[in-house]
Length: 288
Image (cartoon, rainbow, N blue to C red; front, side):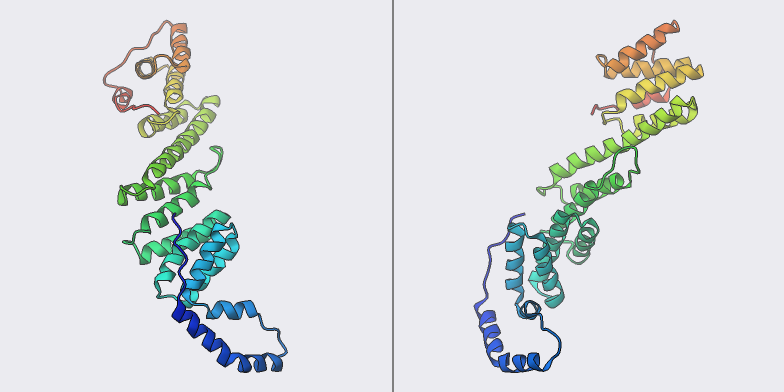
């Protein structure tokens, strides 16, 4: 995101200077009469105008001082809640939290921005930050994939609502990755059932991949595993159809070669049954 050039407000600074001079005796007197130490940095922070705090936040962000940047952006939101800088600081604060790995805080800030300012130029970026936060938390396929689903939903929102934004291409790429993760999870569970010879449960998982994730890298294995599962169940027509669909789409695949050998061992060969669900699903395969 392009950071804005620092803007200094002379009237605001003059007013601040005048206030500081006039109130200095009272402030020092109060300090002397108090038993507690006064945090001067907090005092300055509370009296800085919004533009000063915002530019300080940007400077800290550019310098990699992410915690300090977050503090500045949060201060604007608290002290100048109805200013233009408060609006800007909300999305910048979300970005700073994302960079620090504070994903929950980043999502909260970004979603709040979207609720308050859904039609502003930065709305697409706020939604993109939400998607990034979920994407960075995607786990290995052996674990729960709720983050993958959330990332897909958030990034699809970027693609749908802001099709001309600069974030669309990356959003689509991350959607493809997250979908591949979901397909991978289904395959992992399907292989587990196949190894245990629970063929019906295995077929259910592999079929889901073929029907819902046909453009992922798992489609070849899914068709091969369906052939294996159907063959083991004695459903030779379905096994032959799965192999035929695999061969039509990926004739040079090692999965197809292994599947062909499996059928040959039983005196069979790939042959498509036009009435099978596999035949219909095969027409939708687009490749990873």
